Every structure is written in structure tokens, then in C-alpha cells.
Image (cartoon, rainbow, N blue to C red; front, side, top):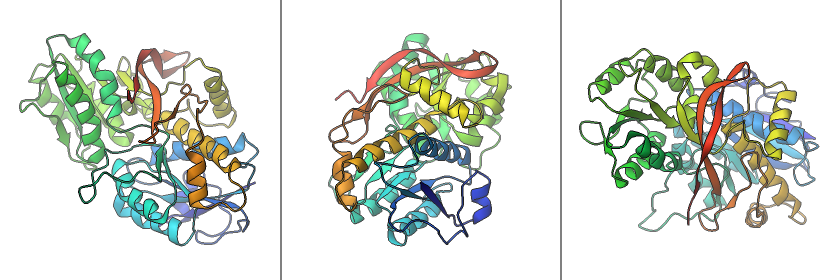
Length: 403
């Protein structure tokens, strides 16, 4: 049986809007005292609420299709709101770790959140099993960041751009590419992956200063001035990273801008999930890169897509849901290997022994030192798939990390 509690700073109403199962008041619980406590920290409000909702759905879907247990143990799933970043997320993480005493923390939408929360989980020797963005961790005190208790089922934030850069270079030849994204840590990481790799391959940016343009986050709603200014550089293509509500506005306005006839390439979050429905025909033809497509033909994905549909979730499953589903799968196997009482240290050691994970994205395993997936990256194109728009698989691009 899965018990779920809400630890949302903005109250029960925020939880209800995303379909949380709440057992009692926001700060009370009817949870089984013997259950394993797992914290799920995701954006339930703010720009990336749709991402957080999908991550929660993915984790719960695994529970619902695996007898509502992880490793044969009852689970007390405690959900908290990450909001738009560290200002909201850090206090929520502290409550999960200090008051709720979770033995694992998963979720985390934003790279800036991961960067701050990672220090808290490492100090307490609690495994952080991130399921979305992961920044390039800066050294602490001149020494590399301690990643012993840090794991991810998703990707490093610079990997989408790295994966697609060679393909884009081949498409534009000697032409230039204009790079644009949001002005925060995730935007910096995502665009850096593309621009560094693209220029190293001999590509040239159309941006006048040779650097990606970053739009104010989360305040930018009108992208047309930026897009029309970019059109004046006459790029052969545009590369972008946006997600959530910003992605909807960006894509719709791109189709209305002076760049409308210029090919748009992107990190796949630009057209992922419910934002694609909101974008509608304006998104058609966008080629993007991600570690998952709902049209992958492997058996694990077919079962995942069928379970997603059977659960009544809208649209097709996303990479956000898939990575969170995989986080639950990793915890399932790790908890099954823990003897006796579950502690953070025991669970962390078991995560390190999980080995190959059979996943909807294709099989993957953790990198031995960086603790992130060694996985395939795919080129996708937005086109109709039956009656709906979908990110349809075009081809494999590469496997990352390479070493």
C-alpha cells in the first residue's frame, strides 16, 4: 500500500490541482509508521508545474503497476513543492530530510534546485535520486563535488545540446545558427552543451557577440522582439531551450515571427508533454533531441505507454514521467536488496549495485563515477501520429556519456 502526504508550503489546494492523494490535513499523516519514507520534491506551482505533475504521475504509475510497494515494502510517499527554484525548494527539502526523515529524495525539476539540495542530502548521507535536470556541479573549496550520494535517472543538463550539435552542423553546413534560451542555470547548461559542441565542430553562431542570447526568466512572455531581432542576423537555423509555459509562448510566437520559415531545432523539452497540445500546429516540423520518445518500439516502452493510457493520463507519456518511473524502478530494486531496517547509507550502497535498468527509453546503467545514465539520445520531429501531434522518432543520434 502507498501512503501519500502533502508537505506543500502553499497548502492542500495546490496539491489537489495536480491530483495528489491526500490522507488527512496538509501537515498530518495516517501513514504506517513502519513504511519506508520517500520524499518526492517536484514543481507543483510556477512555470514548471506541468513538468512536476508528469514526474509525479510517472512515479505513481510505477507504484500502481507494481503492487503499490517498492522492494516488497510499504511506502510512505511524501510530496513537497519545489516551486520555481531554490527559494521554495530548499526549505521544502529541509523539512523532508529533518522533520519527515525520508531515506531517499527523488524528483527535482530544476538544475539550480539540484545544486543546492545536493549539499543537504550529501551531508545527511541520504541518496538523492534526481529525475530531471542535473547541472554541472561546481567544485566546493577547490575540490570536486562529492557525488557519493547523488544519482540521476535523467541526464546532465548539457547533454541534449551535445547530442544534437553534430546533426545540426551537418544540416546548416557553412550557415550560422542563432542560439536562445532562458536566463537561469538550466538555460545556461542547456545552451552551453550545444554552443560549445557546435563551435568546436567548426560551426558559427549567428548571435552578434558569438554568444547565446538569454531572455529574462521567468518574466518573459513576449518573445517576438527577441525573435524578430534574431531574424536580422539571417541564421540558417535556430537552436532553443525552453520548457513549461515559456515553451508554449515561444513556439506560438516563433510561428508568427520573422523567423517562421527558419528551421527550429531544440532540446526536446520545448515540445514535450502537455505543452505540445497547447502549441498545436505551430510546433509541427520542429526537430528536437531527447533521451525518450513515446514511439520507441521496445517492449518496456509499449507496456509503459499502455499503462499510462490505462491510468487515464492525458496525451502520451513524457521524458519527465519516464525518468521518474525509472527512479521508482531503481528504488524498487535497491530496497529489495536491503536487509533489515532501511537507512540512507544501506539504500545508497544498494543503488550502486542496481546494474542494468530495463527502461522505456531503452536499457541503461549508471556511470560508475558520475552516477548518471549511460543512454541513447534520439532525434525526434513533431508530426501527426494518428489523431494527435507527437514527437516521432527520426533516428538515433549518440550515446552519452561516452566515457
